[in-house]
Length: 347
Image (tube, rainbow, N blue to C red; front, top):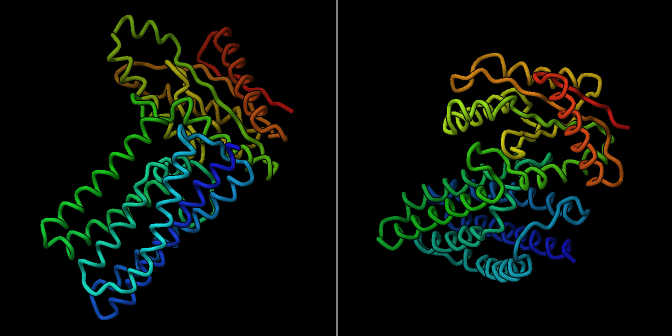
């Protein structure tokens, strides 16, 4: 089953990070009287935070709240299981490390294992989830974690040419993995989630809303007369308007809301939690924030359709119904003269 293979992938990621925490704990003991002791301790604490993140993510996967989204899940599962076994073997080696270079080579292997593309894909995906673990933004957190390691690697382990090359390779691989993950889920023009990334992010939040019995809201927004703007001023100006609009939308919505580019000049947002009684006011606030001042030198007006309600047992069906209702409300707003928002309450 697809869920089973995703469980195996996350279990291996958890195992690798658990081994990493143990490795850094062993290195902390080995360098008790060395300036590096506090560094290894910090690395251990950071890995323990990662372990809490993977543990929480694993529970969500087992409960079926996260879809299997990897293109080659079985290949990834096999690769990660092998890496987890190698990581376990490094724990005993760390206890025997008797030099700075030996310690950093072991630590390098652990960080290298975590450069498997599955890690970054899951970090990137989970960045939008309402997690309770201390790792609130796994993508940014691991970037900082790796940055700490490379800085120490360069300071203490970079005396030989080989060690300098290893540090450079590690950083390059991390940046490349992150770039690939972003390309798969982000719109290249605006940097917002694309349609695939949006739905992948929203689905597990929908399960959380269902469990808590809280209302959610969907917004679909379309730029009024965008074709005329493109025809009159050119596509470069149109692109700048879309980029500026995405920034203004991000500022107008809450940090907990999920924003994406639906396609063309359409944007979509998922708001959770919401108060149904004030949801129309939220949509009006967004509309007015966009038209308040010109964007890329152009006066921009938008029409908005919204829908709000609770999530039932069929989470995906409810999400699709809310998005469909918001789309129909958008059509009504356009037909009624544009530059307005229409919202409907479901169930």
